[in-house]
Each structure stands twice: as structure tokens, then as C-alpha cells.
Length: 240
Image (cartoon, rainbow, N blue to C red; front, side, top):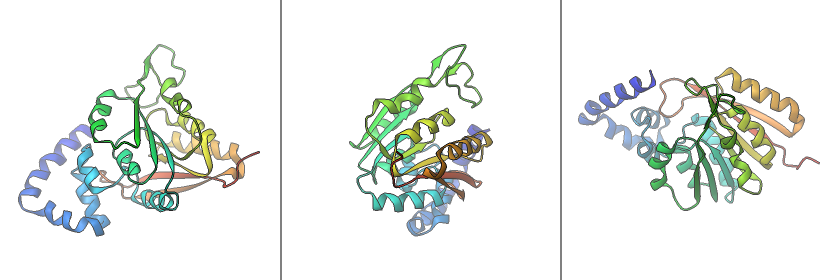
């Protein structure tokens, strides 16, 4: 269904471009969220199109909040599970971005576009009949994402911002909390899915007052329907 939607959108983009609709939206986009969103619909799975719009693939509300936070923390260190438009967006706003991608083909598309402050690693899932860390995404049965999740352990130090937007997200969340700097933020995307919200609830219960969450919902680049992105913030004080 997703691939059909992408093909239909790209077909529709041809006449819209021919009659000048896309050019008109492009002129308005810098100051108009609606124009930016409409343009992003024809840029789905087009990393260059989303790069030109300068948007990550999270809710606009969450992106605004993270952008404000990054302006106040210009030396931020970022770790990201799942690369894409967000990697480029973060690289323009943070000191460094460590991104882990499970799909080598997608990483090959993205790598030539990345600036020097991004370290992109490919960590593929291992095929096995008994995964240690499985993904509930359809089509991923028999794939172990343990090495992918553990990739954060290969980079020393705390992270000011951690983005969870790839595979095995529940397991990534547990790793992210352990490596989040005091006062830092975790961006957990696509929390419309119940299993993700349940993982967040369990994490908040275990963390007590050390973590709080803001759920954002609304327009999201490249998608024709509203979605939700969660922002988990750590206390400014390090736990004893």
C-alpha cells in the first residue's frame, strides 16, 4: 500500500509541476507550514526533496520544539537509530550526529549527501531462528536486531539528543535512557502504535521523576494524515 501511495503521488506531481502549483508552493514554503507540508507530500521517500524543505520526518510540532532546544544547545551530541531526512536536519543544528542504519541500500543513497559532522554506520540484522531482539514490523521475522540496538555502546559518552526512528524501537528506548545526558531529549517517532506507547509508559514508571514526556500530534512531512511523536526529557540533574 505504501509503495502504491508513493507511485500515485509522484504521478500527480507531474501535472502539478507543469501548471506551476509546486512552484507557487515553493515560494510560500519558507513562511508557511501548510505549503511546506503540501510540498512534502510529493517528496515522500525523496531525501533531496525533504532536504530542500529542511524538515525531519517527525510531527512539525516536535520538530519545532527540538529546533528550539538545539538553538539553546549548539554543541549537542546526537545519536540516531534510523537515518534519513532527520539526519541532514540534525547535522545542520548539532555539533555531531552518530546515525545507525539497518538497510545498506538506503545508507548508500544517503551517505554522499552527509556533511562531515555525521558518522553513519550500517548494522544489518542477523538472520536467526531465535532472535534476541526482534522487530514486530511485518516482514522482519527471523531477524535479530541485537547488534543494531547495541551500536550506541560503540560510541563513548552521553548524548544530548537521541532519536528512535528505526527498528526494534522498544529495545532502543531502554538503551537510550541509559545514555541520555542530564537535561537531554529522546525523540521517539510514530507513537500511534500501541506497543511504542506501552514501552514509553513502562520506561516512565521505572524512571520516576527523572523522565517526563510530551506527546505531539499533528501534521507530519510526507504523510497525508496526522501522526504522533513523543519527546522524553530527562531531569537536568544526574541520577545518583
